[in-house]
Image 1 (cartoon, rainbow, N blue to C red):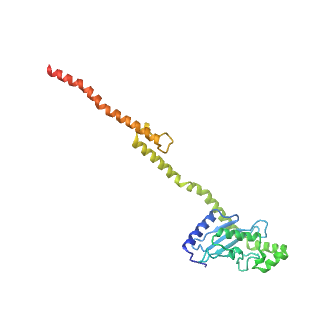
Image 2: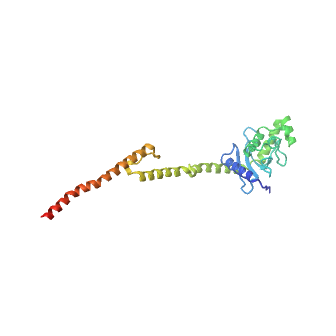
Image 3: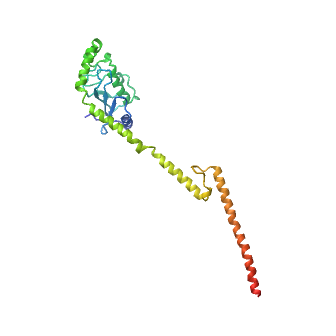
Length: 259
């Protein structure tokens, strides 16, 4: 098996991109994630319509090296295919994986490039010389041969491709229910607690902020303070009222003593 110790940064970036591609893959591409070996990237590519590879399902591999992403991965067709840029052993020849490689090109870009090869083969860099020659000199013969290979070798992947696509769509439908803005409920409860606690501390219910307000404004606080001060002033008057009521009772006591 092909096992490579990728750098920690490469593992992080590859893992992030693979899961992103699995959730939202490019058209006609389904990602297979090998969690035990991220250096062995696999995917299914559906043959583009209007090409000799139409209705075929081709499995490809990208073999990452220790130097990735500074060094391009090796691309391989696992499914047998008749194509100018694919050798008999499945090795893929494309400039993106050779002289045109850049470290910021991601896995998704590579897979799209391979898909484009099925639409527009490049006979100038042919690994399969027979296919390259037929493409240039007798396209109908080339297309007939490519369709034959597709019908023989590229039909078995349809079931797995469809399964991966169904799983992806199912996960996409379920995720909004479980991951729908998970912070929204926390934020709402925090606002409610903050408003309630501020109201309890500063005043009675009649002096609480207006309904629907989650923020205590300066004017609201001033109103609460004024009402609280007025209430405290009323309480300070009560002892004076009590002393006025008790004064007549003292006079009655004196009159009783005189009698």
